[in-house]
Length: 226
Image (tube, rainbow, N blue to C red):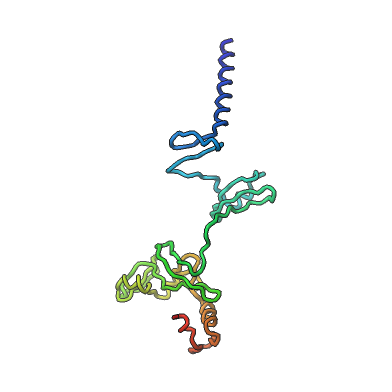
């Protein structure tokens, strides 16, 4: 009889604790504090973050009967997605980040150097010479050694800070020959092709003949200097 009484008391305590936890919300914290009264679940930490399921885009598409609002992180494109049941699709969760626009300062995330940019016609150009890499002596040659090497005028690193780096053709192309590749440019930028230069010069001076092999046009160069 006592065993039954103890068992019933145990069940009652469990039910009471369950109701208490549900009523107060669940807290996962570094300081053992209770959850905010308005939250069913509160996670608090000053040293760790929250990880939701990470999977490839292909894996996401195989999730069986996803619930409305289900959240995942795609390792294919490094974006968050939520499932919208009414539309039967996974939608990217977009963040309100101010978009970069040509004319804004460009920051090269490889070394945090900054460059002015300029819109000319439909094209966006860097308005300063690139200055990426480690300086080597002008008496040496830049080589294919997985490092970006640069020359500085008069072998003075301060001149690179003022005028930008100097590069041999193979170095700036990263030892390939494909036109329009990124080369040693920052992410999202590429080395200009003949067609890029043609669009630039004809926008500034419509008398330029891009197919000509001799100097022509009127003042495209002068306008670029301006």
